[in-house]
Length: 321
Image 1 (cartoon, rainbow, N blue to C red):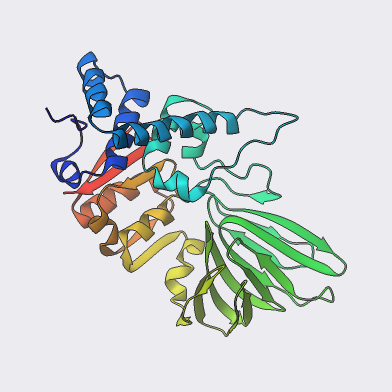
Image 2: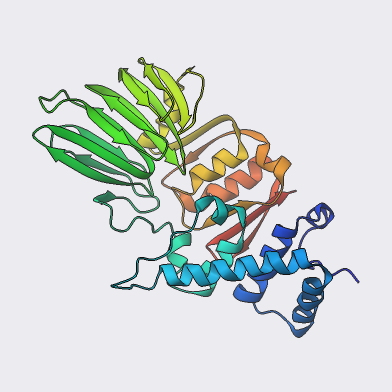
């Protein structure tokens, strides 16, 4: 008897993707109202292969670890989960968020709560810095500040920000991310960081990108993607597209759907998971209105002819039509 999750579509069942199947089972058991028949079906699926049992056990461990992360402790620092492992577990995180009000903050984009400056999902905020420079924060962005008479430094913890840097006797202005550092004496640039990868586009003057392995100077109108151990090719920056969020729009032209979805996470509550690798790689072009975040997925569905399934308002799965 086939013990795969009965609610998966036929294409996903054919892939035999154990992690997706385990995640789907976990979401059903923890976040839904499973019937007795479904519980029995899960038991058969777990017994069918040690790989099944191991995948499901990983999700249970993630659930327990996430609960610990949200439990304050004065003497023990909370464990930090690898984001790569977190993402690799697919929609498991959605199940966690559905089943507890505290953990649902993750789905709503609540993160880096102790940052010096942060924005919530969907919020835009312009901040004046102590040296006279400014930073325009996109949604779900967080940064720390370190300014003194001889130092002006920012740590971009997550998200996207547009920096307008004024010259100062304090020296160069630096922004640090997990991927590396961007340094400028004066000018404007937009910096985005996602895990250990960052992207910078220079719109005025110049900026220097410094990683563990390389140093790269960027002129006005240029774009660079970089990580700690790899620096991409310098490209012409599509500034109108990159900076569209500052004018209340999201603009995508010939962009992989996975990149589009990652961007949407900054502007609407809830997490979106693409359940097909080919679909994730599909290149799309569309313009979205940031003032109407509730319509974003509907527009996306119509533009791409995809099928979306929503589990509460905070979890959306995207399938091929």
